[in-house]
Length: 188
Image (cartoon, rainbow, N blue to C red; front, side, top):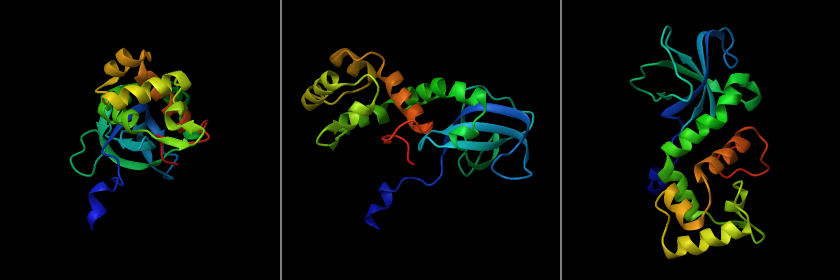
């Protein structure tokens, strides 16, 4: 099995808290009650419903471990959520949380910018990121050919693109909420 190392993990290891309902009812598993946590997975950017340990406090945008062994704040992953299944609080928290997630995984997203390819002859995948039009696209392609971008600051300094993490986060929120026709970061 040569390709096994490149297989994406089926399960998330970490998630970022969007909202917590202390005496809540699960929307994914009937009859399940307790501390219901709505979160977004770090790796696959999936919306998740989690069962939190009772009497444990959670902060908005907090990164919690949800992997197989050694969870301390999460009892179980109840299931996937649809954007429309999120609470109003979770929807409001999503842009801030996604921006934090993008910044915490800077290497991954800068890597995407360094490797992104055209989708078809008319549109480049980078143009799907808000704020990147033809001018910025040409600058990015020219600069990354000279030397790959090292981080968001490098990208901002060399291209003049302001706050790339926020722009990428905005795109991810569009994809999660179903407002995007094509996804580049979130698997459907």
